[in-house]
Image 1 (cartoon, helix red, strand yellow):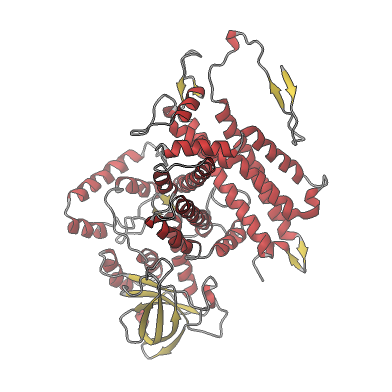
Image 2: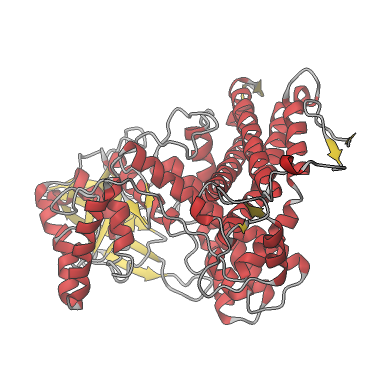
Length: 604
């Protein structure tokens, strides 16, 4: 028996159904109706969100107020960029839940080693079952906890994204969006209906928290094609050989055999394809390849833009750990607006003299060399008169002054350059062409920061900590929401990897995440709602950096609130404040996403 149910959706009739009598032959068996509904409705909500972001962005590009398009106003631009980020996070969560439900290997009564599920999860698991193919309706097997975790994350983020993005679209559209003259209200109503039928996101968050705190984890590894087997056999053999070597020999071989940055061309890397990079990451996980620090940003730029002599002089020592780098880019008057730098380089016999002040220079007190931007042609437009230099940090005229940060560390420094001589052979790229080289370096900086988001303050760190503490109901829900956000960020990284594998695009895949250092087209990430005029690595890494840095701060704040006297989280709540500043502030990342992914007009 069906009874009409009230709702706001004008295009979907809702009803409640009471089962009176069902013939045995019509019984489907136990199926995860609630879970399937959450994923399907989450997918529908993502479609609503994509329409909302695209429609509002198109409107913002042409609607003029105060003599210019409203898409130029930062408030509008940031609202739409944030909506796209919300959409991409939800897409990743729903996609991951769908592939989890579609994986036959994840259906059955089995858990993860060392995981004991709490009673409320076991009861829910018994009520949510799938019939394996060929079995009778009564002979069913439960969904695996990992699948339930993936579905729960989709339940938290999927339908909610539709509501948030549709509401933002109405706000951008203004009065017309509030009337029946525009379709925006129909999409908003559909989003509300999706959320109503999919279930309260708070309830899903409770279930996610129960699973995560019990130790359930979602594996985020790409499924590789059959032709990957020979590649894996070869890489695994190399890994075994390196594992057997003594540490000093291993370090030498890492450098000489191109394992540190395998995507680089030989002899500095291995010219590894995206598939090879993924396999190297998986097989070398326990080998602790050297971390080059700032060198990982400098090396690709020297490889791409430097001379043969520069490559031979600097790269072997960097890979061997003998050269430590710092980045001399930011200045007191040129942070996010880096092209506004004022450090000047004056031509002298045999080279240049550099004069100016740099700031926020990480590890400058330990660095041997710095990559430096200086203005060589003050009369040219600001992006065209910059040159990229390699500066000897021990040269006369270089003064380093450490800065104490709020957590007590002295990672950052001020660097003063007083008539520092830099010979011509230490110019990378063309004179006055340094901005092009710098953009290449900055793309690697965003990739590195995006791939290492929140070290020590991830959702997994939160779960391990919170599992030891008694949580109130509101705290459990908050923990579930934080876990959902973190797992979706991981899924977003996997989507980038799979897109790279599908297209074969060359680039760096650090921490299992593929990105293109060539600024090529990026698929699925940050371009799905509306293909921007300029999309690529900067956009994709900006999306992940924005999500990851904010998430790391939220995790630190949550864990500190649980135990304010805990020394580790007392440190992390201070440390994470820098995450939304370094490598481009949150506001700069939103501008990048708005302009490059959504095609909104740049500020005049």
